[in-house]
Image (cartoon, rainbow over all chains, first blue to last red; front, side, top):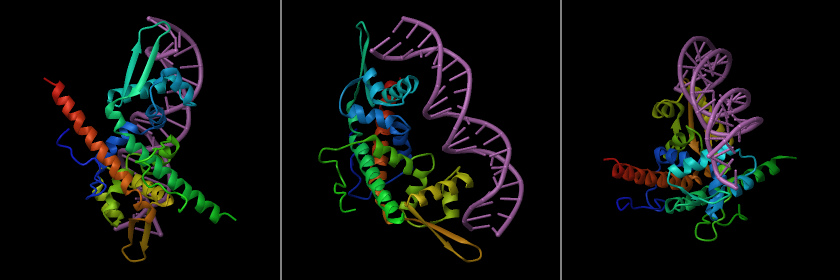
Length: 125
Length: 125
DNA sequence: CAGTATCCTGGAAGATACTG
DNA sequence: CAGTATCTTCCAGGATACTG
């Protein structure tokens, strides 16, 4: 943890390797992880809350993605031995370090989308 | 382009929506685009150079990904009507705005990977 | 409530052969 | 050199039914 210095290689030489990117994409990519991560970035949520708030996701997928994020050390799963059962999910410390990554991607995506929109309306008619 | 202010929403409220992220993932995600983008970030390259430098990619995939990036306005395809034919690919202005996104993802990926490595070697034996 | 267990499908990617 | 054209394979994700 000490050996890895630059949290932002942005200002200096900007070393970009597809290897690190592939790793990141494996962790936060796919159809459902962005939705899950965005929600958990705002705070702890129960399984049922996630399921309700993410429209169209199947239980199979929700569980699978949550387990992956958990084993990647991004989120934590807390089981409360009650009746009825309660399970809460929340970001870990490591998970929270993704915030800037998610923000950068979200930000660029929205910008690019607005530019395409602009270009489309320009060209049409 | 003027209406879109925050290049880094990082410092302020950090609005993250999965919609913008999904868009970004669509543009730079997948198995091959990271590799292509990293190479073109360093400068113009010919089709053959890309093919040689990206180990394992098939011609079908290389062409398909290049066409997608082109239609997304990320890269430009320049054809030189010579014999033998020459085709060069390079980042557009818009494409270059992805640099910080790629760097952030690459950076975080490498950090996370080194942490996992650390954790693994710790746990093993 | 918070999941498992199966079966199934569409689209992304691979392999291979051919061409302006 | 820089691609197309087909055919095939693989797997992320979907649909549905069941359970501690």
